[in-house]
Length: 475
Image (cartoon, rainbow, N blue to C red; front, side):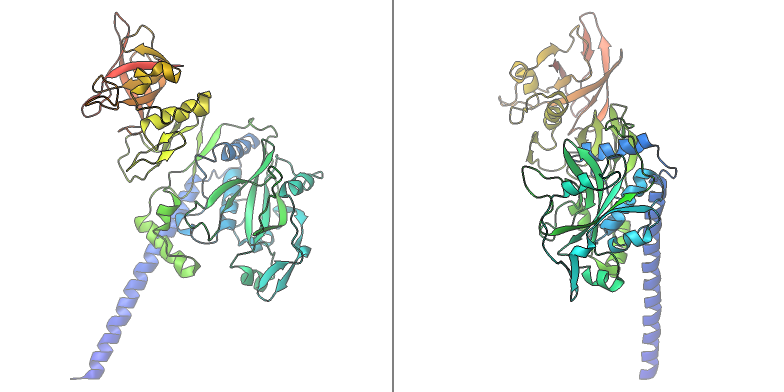
């Protein structure tokens, strides 16, 4: 047996396999990166946004923070310390062009020195001890006071974009900061402005104590009831103004633009990821490319229309609990998958939960959680504060009315009863009544509406079997 020949063949096979695997690895990584870059290019405006458009996007980041907090880094970057890239991406997206360059937080000002104006700096309050950056003296202060007293004409304004550089005491980047001889801030935050007497900011949140928390956050950065703004883990270092980022001054005066994103929850994406570091980033990019779902970056839509579609009404692809389907008058419509969990407005994301949430948030109606099944909106309408109009009534349905459907004609809870279904009327014509709904085949659509001698007749909703309409109720 010629062992040298066998060893030689084995080495050749090993090298060939290595080249093939390396080529496949590199190709998949390149494909993943190209897909991300293509999506980003398609989502970015590529032309500078008008001041009213900038104001509209900033306002809606705040107003819709409980519904959608968009991300500006690809899903493969969710487990890495990429807060700087996220903030830079947010600024560029909002302004509509690649205004700032992506760099680590501690290199942010150096990479963008011609595009920033420094308005606050307390670098002198820090020192280096070994491989750590520490405060010389622990100064507890209100960030809101800084924001109110630094910036243009002696104070920060809400008509420009500002970025805060802060140092996170548990950061793993101190060694990199020290070796680079750069700014000592390890993270960045975009200041959204002052709303309802408090300052708000957008950032990529890192806290090892809460690994399951969604990392993209819009948080208050102002004092509240005498509590300090910044916890002991965060220290403000610098504040910059982004040059040429003017927006209209009056809040609510901007165009009704909104950033929507069809993206799985952080916990679901995090299952695909391998961790930080360069190898982790490469593996994450490939993993998300092969198994990822949803959009990497947000889209801009106009909220001037009542119904805003995030995904198609008849979408049959991947699902996850609470997936955002769309909006009606700014209230989210979400997908029901799996067992329901109780929330503030009822069982998530049942049809009744949408009705209750819409009436409470938009119309100021009392919270009707824990007050019955869907058909109780008909059988107990008066107790809930509604007036009934039977199907066939001479009173035509109106936008905002609640359509009530029931399969057995009995209140839920009685023997062999059907809990029924409810939907919100969005539009009415001579031939159709259009609606939005949760926990149904299509989240928005229209039903035939017929005008008969006795009144208006809504056709059954096409469930299996079809469910007749009892009527509609109105406040």
